[in-house]
Length: 103
Image 1 (tube, helix red, strand yellow):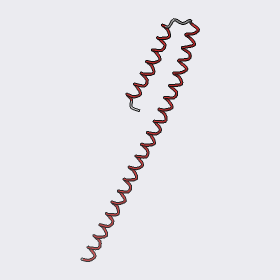
Image 2 (tube, helix red, strand yellow):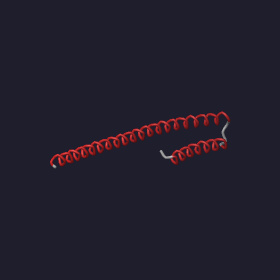
Image 3 (cartoon, helix red, strand yellow):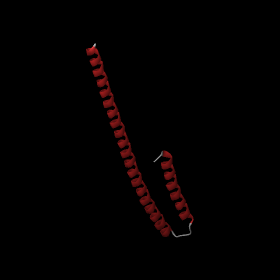
Image 4 (cartoon, helix red, strand yellow):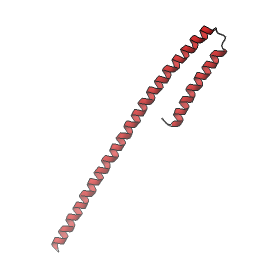
């Protein structure tokens, strides 16, 4: 995920948490109800954050896997091209040797 996406996600979660806490503090509830609500919200946000972290880890692994595959493909292609060039050079050398031996 791009840095701006991470920043947006972090800002969104932080804003939601701060907004919820401010709303709860201004609500006309007793202290015990307020503590229960805050505890519930913190627990819910903690679960959401854990889900997001797991999702980001999975996405990171997928991106790393894709990058490794692309790197392997590039290396494989480069090896094939190098082998082809070597074969062409050997064929040219053989042709040169044949032309020298004819003369």
